[in-house]
Image 1 (cartoon, rainbow, N blue to C red):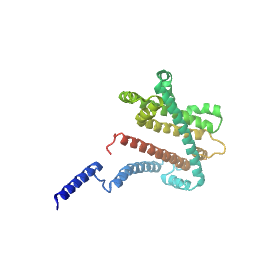
Image 2: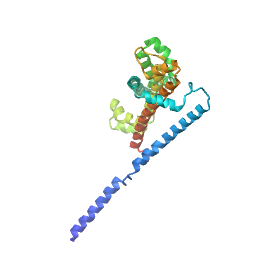
Image 3: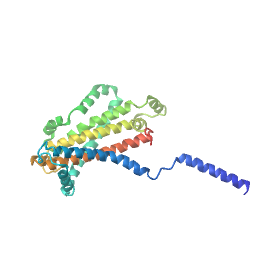
Image 4: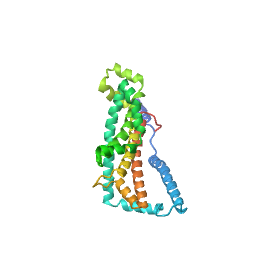
Length: 290
């Protein structure tokens, strides 16, 4: 074999080796399955423990069966509910209210957070007020909301927004506060001013904390909404809260517990979405070992 051919072959092998180093080691075929299993089994174990404890309390006859029914009856009721079109209509109405209120809370909270973090006099004036509003129990707003908007959709929306917006604002304020001063000076040197500075520097740098604020804001809005649907029954609407209230009026403990599980499952699913977003951000920022 000519010497030139041998040299070319060696160079090709070296380049291939560098490419392999850049790409990193190949993932094992069973890696995805192991990740799914490692994420699934703790949740499955927690569910098994809760259901087992529930069954033990039922068997102890701590309360009569019509007050504290067994898991089998509740899960059977839940299985029947999810086959009813009216049930999904109620879920759709509740989620529409939740997403509308949360979207408004995000818009309002972001504007307030950006303004407070930018102007020191404004922070001195209302910074503590935002935290106070965040700690305010949402149910305390319903008497005022009913006086202002009567028994209608606006009353529920008002409480959802005022319950979630402070958390969103505080998340953004906290994120902006922890943006390294060096980054701000670099941005200033590069000519970033006003909206451009917020869009290209401050908001991306504060995003991890902002996502945590969004997650907390969703928790507040979801709890406010559930309280609102139990207290403010809008004529002609049948939401999850209305159906739960009807079950309580009829002393139907099985249905009440079934709807509690529905609310819990929706909350867990949304929490998983925020966890995925937070995990993606952490991975992008190099804060995970994956």
